[in-house]
Image 1 (cartoon, rainbow over the protein chains, first blue to last red):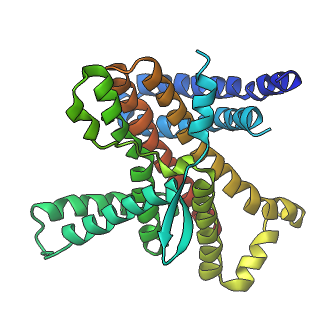
Image 2: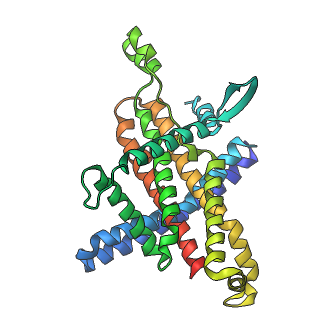
Image 3: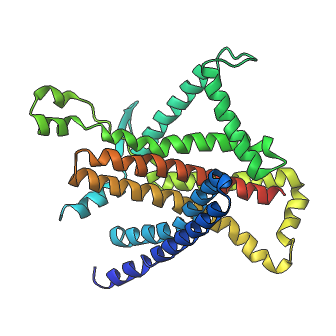
Length: 72
Length: 251
């Protein structure tokens, strides 16, 4: 490990952005549902899709961290 | 706690299975064999469910029609005018990815060794092991799917716009963007591949850790999220992104 531990922790900083993005999207979705409850199901599918897309940044960080640990 | 590192390394590596055929030894990775199982299942399923079709659907034909309608609607919603050309490809990839991402749900059936450890009954040792790993956990399989969808984007662009129109589309808003448009063809498959591979690998690793630390009850509950929900969502996202790229190439 040693120095690469610092690099791995830096790669995992990408998870912060995913959390931020998903929380932002969820907040907006709650607002939209409160304003227009009859569009709930449509908003929910769009929210799930957006969350899965925003999650990708965290996944990139995770994959790179795993590669750094196991494939030296 | 110290066994976890080796366990993750073991999950990440792919096993090779030797097959002896006509005096030759062929090495086949386990992902390929799981993919063969899924292919066989899909082929048999589609042969059985599409026999003796009628104009007024009844029984098993209803299930297939619902599936086909769902896929058609999904493609029509994102691709638009030319949806009829791409609905078969999109549907095939969606069905295959849904099955291959959720196949690790069979891990909740305990293997014979585990049952023997718990109960000390000799008869359980002959119980078969259902340890199927999802093939998209292998980075090469995920990359294969990503390259396939990029080839579909290329072919659709050339087929709908003809060669000259397709070449012109590289210079379309401003010629300054040409390098980025070419880079798109490298970055898009990479991002599709990493998304699929990372999600499935993360789910498999987390499930493996839960199986080894709390073997009873909890894995069944957690695998509903990590195996079924996450797998289906990622397959849907993959297909949705592919159809978005196709829509951009076609319009």
